[in-house]
Amino acid sequence: MENEVIESLNTEGNNPRSRDLDQMTSQQIVALMNQEDQAVIDAVHEAQDQIGRLAEAAYQALQAGGRVFYVGAGTSGRLGILDASECPPTFGVSAQLFQGVIAGGKEAIFKAKEGVEDSPQAGQEALQAKGMTAQDIVIGIAASGRTPFVLGALSYAKEVGASTGSVSCVAGAKVSSLVDFPVEVVTGPEVLAGSTRLKAGSAQKMVLNMISTAAMVRSGKAYQNYMVDLKTSNQKLEKRAINILKALIHEDIDYKALLEAADYHVKTALVMHKLQVDRAQAQAELAAKDGHVRLILENR
Image (tube, rainbow, N blue to C red):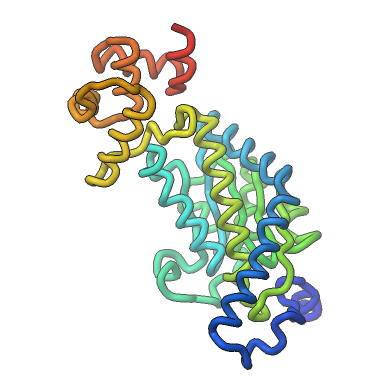
């Protein structure tokens, strides 16, 4: 019975447009894949209301002092880890705020461990090891919408009282019935039948980008559309920080000196210059407005 269910999933279906895949040249394969990828954009568009609700739920969890846990296996798990790992340098937040949980642990990030996704208990234990609480939100990522590791993690999250969401690539996904905020991005059969690292993976990556970016921007981690909380951890990022200040200030000043005076924090440097205050006062202003630069600058 389970095999019949799996075979009925559109992520497992056979794509008639790629039936002759093994006879194509590299150029033809690339052209076909590019054509198929156009459908990903449309599928994400169709799900944008669901995505928006899940992004807002993530923001609300963060506002309440919680964390965002992405839970998945295989490609889905790696995509969650990728998105979570990019949040600290992009938004200047703790690595604890967004966390990726993958079936099989760290080893599975680099080497496929397909069998480990079959245990719901392992999903629960992975969240227990993270110390998940009712203030957190757990987002299960599963192309098929029925990965046991993910379902187990979400069931445990519901027991604890945490908010839950899911990102799947089938209609009427099993996981959707278990969560508060389901997202179904129906991408259809893959060019290489069953290889959900392709269209399904691309769709999941887009959705996770939207969730973390929306939640962080809503949290005051951007001013206009600039990354004013980025970490200047290398020369490229220091140059980017200076360019952001130039774009927002438009004056002939020593931007590197301003950035240094702000301890290399763009948001602090901007407030220091605009209000003509020292670093301590700028930091106090930011703290009073929960880091929202616009609330400081546009109320003066």
